[in-house]
Image (tube, rainbow, N blue to C red; front, side):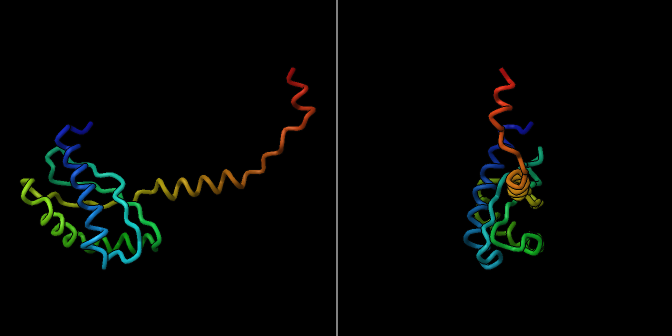
Length: 126
């Protein structure tokens, strides 16, 4: 369970990183949509675990590119929140698979061959 302080930092970092991916890191991500799905702070606020959802891109390549530029992204974050926090957390990025999992499940469900209930079946239930 996260403390109020951790939750406050998580929200702040989530908001700022979202803007960083739209502005400062735009060259890095190009036309891809990078969504900061969730941020979880370590109890001492020194590490931020960040779940990213990537759309309109080769996810693996873009994810590696973001990871390779972690220091740069952390610097942008420092410029934005440096005055209001004691330490700029280390960033640990993770792929958020919930969107692709949901897409996969949609495909599975729509491909199921479920026969229509016939009138006879319904009458048997009485």
